[in-house]
Image 1 (cartoon, rainbow, N blue to C red):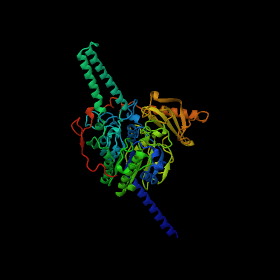
Image 2: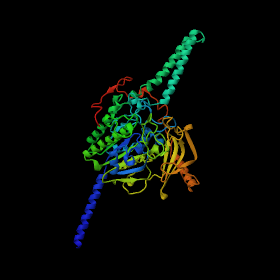
Image 3: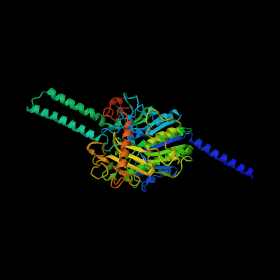
Image 4: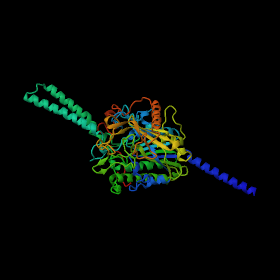
Length: 585
């Protein structure tokens, strides 16, 4: 009897050792697939509560993996959010945010971008033997001092392969759409030009009828200065589709201006091709979609298919593309050795409208949207992880996490080490995702709008409260509208915001909509909570250093000598792409 028990125990031990060995093998440098949508609202996805827009592939990831319900972007706009994602640091630490209206990079031909002294997760994994690739949107700069120095380019920041759009999809990229880039600046420059030429015309008439005793040299000089002023701004804003809307493969411009109707097909093809080429791994692939940013370029197959107009069509097309990429993973037998992650860079764009048609996302029950640094709708985004055999399936985690957490998580999985010469604000999520712990390591999270701190979140674990204090909130336009429809995007400072002292305080655990601010009368701990959050703000500010601002006006104006060009500048025209640009996705 004892011998049978001994044999049985030995078999159990061997099986357990085999399972452990199998898990360790899976954990050893997995492939990493990171998928990021652009401007997608958390309420646009089926697994987050939407029952009308069809997202079966994203929903499948959630069913087969872990869904985060309090996944927070470090910024409510794309360039700063993506900088934080890539570096694991608040964008204010790298200078990738602004104290002015320039809150993103406006030009590929500008000199601002992700600084060279920042270390991306791609650069660390590249040194660990990973083949690293980025397909799609970059929007973190290209050049510094010359047209081909590519100091901010993805290949400089750790990616072995890049294919995509170094800028962002905007209305200016699609023929027939109203201009979107720098509308206020464009209107101001046009107004100044009209004033100059009106003044010149007045001088000419006055001279001819003898009312104004002025010489022709002054009139001609004024006219010449007006012409120079017009050329100086129109040479950039008048040709946005040529300067900003282009495709690159590694260091080469392959299509300028880009044909937006075929871009989705080209990028899907590139993503699946990268997976096939690197199936022996390990690889890191980031697929950064142009969907679902305006102008919502959608192929004919998906036009009119959703119940939410063009925006819903665009979301469903993106979901289909995600399905094709996941199929490529399965086809190569990489499913169980690939960590897949899906998110959006920030919340949906509430102000994006065309008449009564909503062209931006839905942020579910959460107040606010894109551009708003404090309200949940601008920063709470989908966060889904799948890794069969390592992460549990059909699991929901309802504690605060951050897009910045991807940095230490993938660095750890890839066998790398975090930089020790700087503060990393992200935290390794693997213990939380695997159920080894029940709370993330984030006690406080700081929510910026540009360089201005608008709100702070405090997860008081011992009582289960998630306090959020708003020091600054945007002034909605029109009043009470829930967004800044009259301005297209909410501002971060000045007369466009309200300051609160004491701050507006909410407990997100009981009021996730942020509907009813707490007060000393309704919350006995009000003063103690605000005092503790104030101390956290002071401690946080002590960790900040003064760095060059990448979105400053000198860095964020168009400089012809920095403009990527596939021909002889300024004749930048080419199409080196192959295949049917209207192929069915």
